[in-house]
Image 1 (cartoon, rainbow, N blue to C red):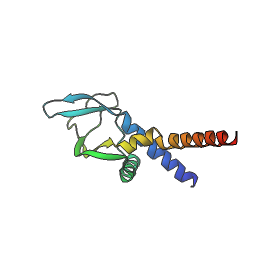
Image 2: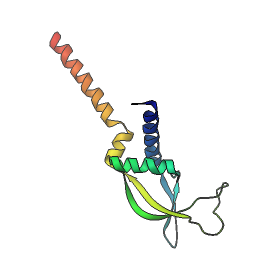
Image 3: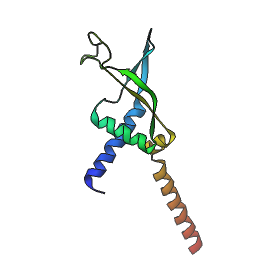
Image 4: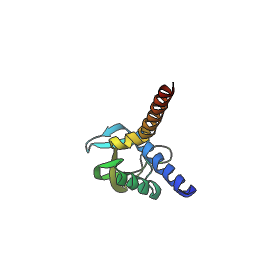
Length: 124
């Protein structure tokens, strides 16, 4: 595995962790619009990372064609149209949570420790 592949994998896992930190802070009425705090940036890099996560089964689209918009630099609502694009809203699957918490690695460490304990007990 090359250094470039390792960096790419790190970026994919970073985007997965960013999805896990999102939260709804406000629901605007009358159209039931969710305002999401700590939302994942909407750019080419995160789009490809999210599609890779989807391919691996770590995330799945909760809804498609959700209207998206960005706040101004000072945090206020934009002038004119609030929404400038549409896209999916992603949800993390059980295997995605397992990847975030590195369950597979911890399980391997536990098995190795158990095997070492068995080998020590057999030699005594």
